[in-house]
Amino acid sequence: MRILGIETSCDETAAAVVVKGQKVLSNVVVSSLAEHKKYGGIIPEIASRRQLTCIKPVIDTALNEAGLRQDQIDAVAVTVTPGLIGSLLVGTSFARAFSWAADKPLIEVDHIKAHVYASFLDAPKNQPKPAKHRPRPELPAVGLVVSGGHTSLYHIRSFQNYQLMGQTRDDAIGEAYDKVGRILNLDYPGGPIIDRLAQKGKKSEIQFTCARLPDTLDFSFSGIKTAVLYYVRQQKNITPTQLNDIAYTFQHSVVDVLVQKSVSACRKTKSKTLVVGGGVAANQTLRQRLTAEAAEQGINVYFPAMAYCLDNAAMIAGYAYHIHQ
Ligand code: KG4
Ligand code: ZN
Image 1 (tube, rainbow, N blue to C red):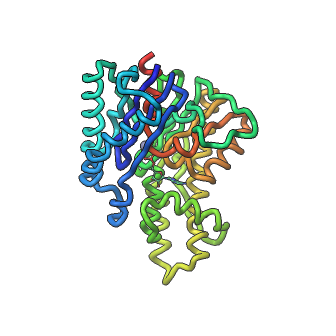
Image 2: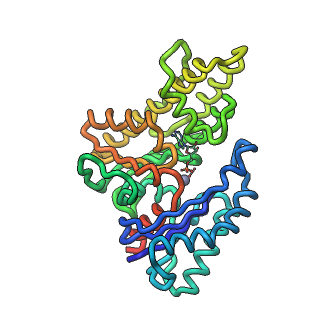
Image 3: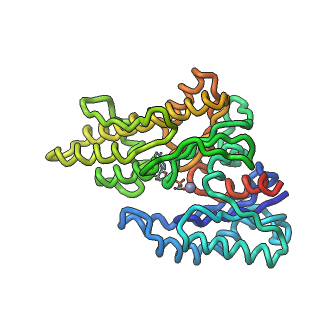
């Protein structure tokens, strides 16, 4: 079964063709991010207008790269929630029209559930093969979503059965990264930049504590963001070394909590598999620490290929296959 996936929930316009939920024939993503940078965040009106101009060429390119005509697609899948309403409207309208014109089923997909599906996709064609054969993750599993808008832990018994175990009570993890980036005068989005700076930083006298919310699997990241703000306000100027150390300390504190809660969720559900998804799944410290600490507990951790961490349509088309089944 060949599914055309469409993703337009935020600033990315994406289309992909995926066979049987696994084999990615094409995966095209364009983003209007550059147009939002000067505002320090996504402007919904700009995002939806760019969706309109990009949607048709992006879908045509995805079909071309897959070597398929419109009538050779078996179903069309689209993100219906959550997201910016104007951006979602473009993708869902296009998908409905495509489904009607081609007389193929339309599959509605939840973006967050699709993020944790990304680890189940075959690795992209251009990516070097891993040295060791890596088996596909198996269900039941715990799913950790770490994106710009969400931080959630799910117990995934099957692709039809996601049970929410915990979520953020305020900022999402990606949002906290981006706000700290803004406090530090970094470009938008701050997440990948802080990750890079943190690799050059070290443990110092700077301390930021991330709320632990013991006895729950919920998260809270707004306190640590404010702690960074107060620290920065107290400094006359921030040297490059200090900047790296701030990034290091912030990153280590939030990753600590993500690791501890994910391992607790696995213990609670007796899961031996942990799948991670969302933009922050690209974070180097999270990838290293979670893999190492979960291994000590006998848990296998799966991160998506880098191309499938950020918003993309391959995860939409892949997950849609299981909804359709
Ligand atoms: O999943 P995503 O593309 O969008 C949403 O669905 O929200 O995630 C975007 C988020 C942004 O907040 C960005 O700063 C963050 O992912 N991000 C990172 C890294 N790469 C992207 N955060 C930390 N470390 C990274 N390497
Ligand atoms: Zn996303």
